[in-house]
Length: 299
Image 1 (cartoon, rainbow, N blue to C red):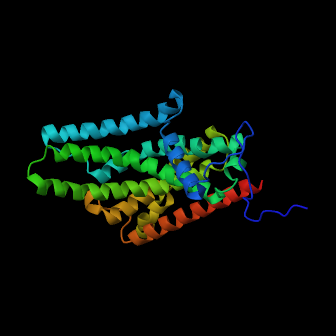
Image 2 (cartoon, rainbow, N blue to C red):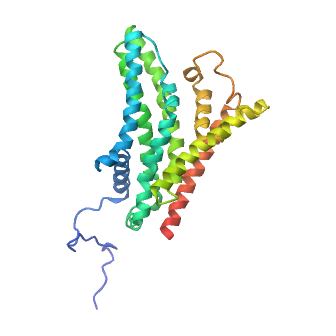
Image 3 (spheres, one colour):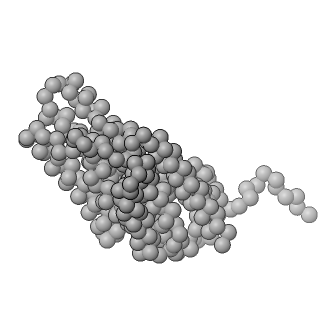
């Protein structure tokens, strides 16, 4: 009776011709990295049909055009239309539509087509799949907001007077803008992907994402006019967009409030509360996303 080989691999890989695969097994890190790169390319429709590129690149074109116009006006007239941080604020509605388009594209199709059991075969873990998709979406949103800001910075760096000192000051203005864009990306990415993971139908997922972001904003608006200063200052936590804005005003007030009287209202003295609430919201969404994929794997 033959003795079993204890060092033999527990599984084998065959190609479509049922020939045994003898190449290297690259492991979990390589699979997660590949999934992240694939998801990031998918966010912008790269490697896919022309139809898949239309909406993401339409939004990229609009934000880039706004940045080019701002850089051109500053170069020709010396007038700053908005700061780097205000750029993200002014285009927040485009971020909502970008997330509503991209998040379902990243996860809903896999849910609908039933390929998740293939993804979840080892070495990729279920949590790896969800986190790779989430990081890819956050990266895509950050690039959407940060790329045009970098373009504005380059336009200013080559046209402002004052030499290296002026360019360094301009860079110090750019950094808060990129950090603020990161906050938009994290909060909108995690909420958007969680909503998208609930259904395999992309239309429903996109509608749900837009509803979450847009229908909560009027709630914050109503709370901001209630006859209570504390309620007015805490109103921003009722909606993701105003939550990010409240944290931004707390951290980068000089970058976001550039006119007299603009500092009234949120967040007042509740800036740390906004930050803690945002951390709790992001943590809760990540945990729910991981729980969602544990459930998908079990079904």
